[in-house]
Length: 330
Image (cartoon, rainbow, N blue to C red; front, side, top):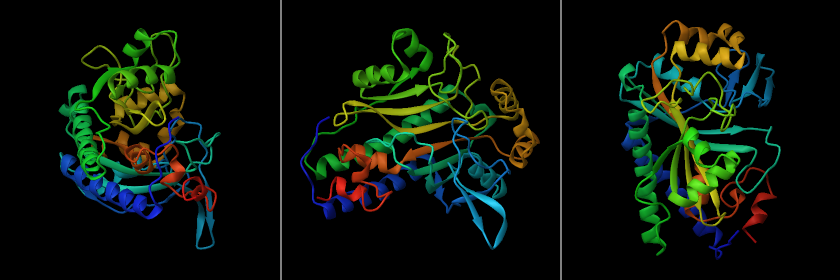
């Protein structure tokens, strides 16, 4: 792992502020998103809570003012879709919010994982005809353009080379399995990102030809089971880049076209989670009361960590005081 020269703390904070502010502007313009405020808590048992890989346990919060147990959100995928329905957003428009969450099930805090998650959570209404791999790719390219705009600005401001290649490479997790059948999923990501610099890895959560899955995804927000134009399954994926500091693949975003009622029912059956159909949110989707959407999350601290070439997320995020500040402030 390479460590770059130290930049004074105050200058770092100014750069982090610029990255977050400018990227939010670029992303909103690229995808026609309106910034909104978001909750940090959700009611236990209403189905709004995101189950991520299906095993993470949320932080529960009790309040004397409210009799019902609340949970700190994992992400806002289901809440965003519900808000778009209630506010009657038109196809082609959407929302973005600055989400902070706690994920205490992280077994190992590393240079890229902390208990605190901060991300731009975005969601956009689409038409039924836009439920396609081509539309997914075009959206990824717009997000990547927003990232490239920040990369170019920082390269000029800091008199350094650009970190991102001009284009992002698309590859399906099944293609990657066929290319590197003896490697683990993370080792495959390492190889493909080292080769191309920036990759959108399609099809996260569905079963591959060898019976494995590349990585876990909950069955009730991203569509990882629909067959696409290429004959592979999945209308979701991750934006991965090559980090020259970590010398490894580095995930910046998880996103995808969301489940239709039919796809959700199919995926819940595959995962043996049919009982979720009793939840309020799931019943709304099955009744056709929620719009078709595409959405995802983009890590704020991860984006800053990547562009400022920091070897540890604690250098751009204070999740535990005072231990994290000791990483880079000394």
